[in-house]
Length: 286
Ligand code: PMM
Image (cartoon, rainbow, N blue to C red; front, side, top):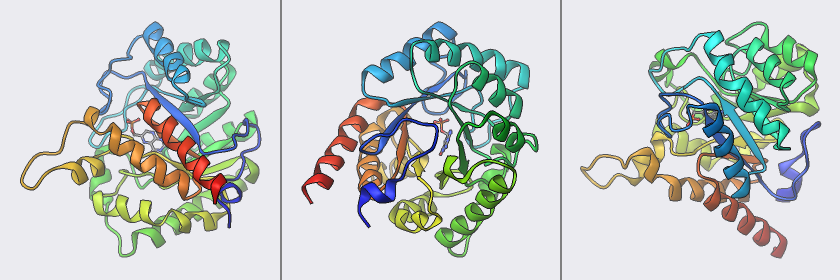
C-alpha cells in the first residue's frame, strides 16, 4: 500500500499531503525533556507560535508531566496551566491539541479552541473522558497505556511487544468507538516509553507497519525519549541528556514518515519538519 494511503485522514482536522508535525508545549515545571522552560502562559504561547514558524502543523499543549515516576498534578492546577495557553494559540489560528488524561481539562480546552484531545491513557484514566470527547465531537488520540507514570516501568513486561500492544490498542479503540467517538476521529499511538523499555520501543518503531492493520492514522511520539538516549550512549557511558537527542528524534521522524505515520510529535520542530518533507519527496519520486 502507498504511504499516502496508509497515512489516512482524521475527520475534523486539516489534511496534509505528508506526515504532519505536532510540536509540543509542556506547560509544566518538571517535564523530563524541556525542563519546565515554558511554565508561564505568555512564554508558552510564544513557544507554540515559534514551533509553528518552524513548521509545526499542530501544537500539543499539556499541563501534566508523564515522565516515569512523575506524580499527578491536581485538576485545578492543570486547568490553570493549560486553558489560557490553548486559548492564546487557538486565537492566533494555530491547530491546537490538548494533552490530558482528564475529561474536564479536555472539555475546557476544546471550549477554548483545541480541536484534538490527546489522552496518553486512551480514556482509561478518567471514566468521563470518552463520553466528554464524544460529546464535543473532536478527534481523539488513543495511546497504548498500562498505568500511571508512578508504576509504569514495572508494567513493561511482554512476550511479544508488537502483538500485545496491537491487541491492547485494538481493545481500547473498540471501547472508545463503543463509547460514542466516531471511528473516523480516532488516531492511534503505540505510546513509546510508556510501560516499555528501550528494546520494546525499538521493536515497535521497527514494526509500525503492523500498527497500520488497525486501520486508523498513526501518531508516533519518540521525541527525546529514553530509548534514544540508550541508542546514543557510547559503550560504558551515560546517555546524552534529553536536549541532545533531537537529531536522533528527527531520524525517527523520517523513519515514521516513510512507514506511513500520520503525524510525529516532537519538542524541536525544525529538523523534523525537514525530515517529513524529505520523506514526502522520496515518496513522490517512487
Ligand atoms: N508522550 C509524552 C506525552 N504525551 N502523547 C502521545 N500521544 N504519545 C506519547 O508518546 C506521548 C504523549 C511524554 O513525553 P513529553 O513529556 O516529553 O511530552
